Image 1 (tube, one colour):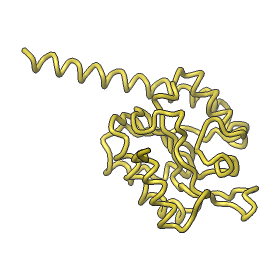
Image 2 (cartoon, rainbow, N blue to C red; image 1 turned 30 degrees about the vertical axis):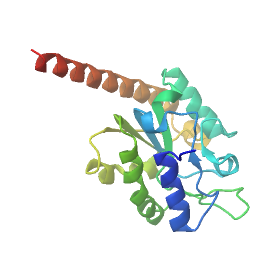
Image 3 (spheres, helix red, strand yellow; image 1 turned 90 degrees about the vertical axis):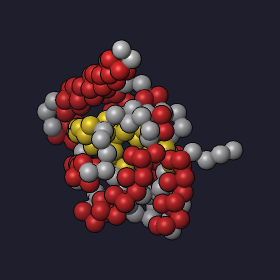
Image 4 (cartoon, rainbow, N blue to C red; image 1 turned 90 degrees about the horizontal axis):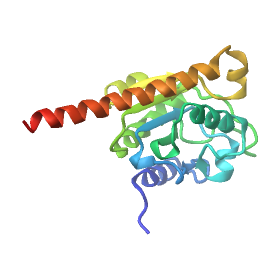
Length: 196
């Protein structure tokens, strides 16, 4: 069985960083290489390490909150890929407690983000999820033509601390889809005009 381009990137990271399960793979239930939307979070949590996937199906409140927000906005899993700006686990040896990403962690992770973006051929929007992921904005601004948006992190800590965070995220996800539809209409219009 052939390994997908995104899974090949995961294997490359594991090899170069001398890690194994600390770098979870892309969830095969998502669109991944065929996705229109890439969501870049901070770093994999203990549940992602345990499941082996960066997934909305992981048994933690962050994944549940994120899934609920995407569902409320009408975003299909077939249209998404989930990744982390720091693709490896940043926690204790027991995989029970994560620490926040530092600037150096993000800088090290950015070297792989461009490869991920390049592997998603129909990418239209990248959503930087939370403050750590937003550190990738300038890097991405000269490495992709996709729209770059941002939203609040779906962790309980952020969702409980920022009034209206859930509603704002849902609004961003709806806007993301509107941008995508406008882009598709523009391409269709261009094709029709060029055929005359």
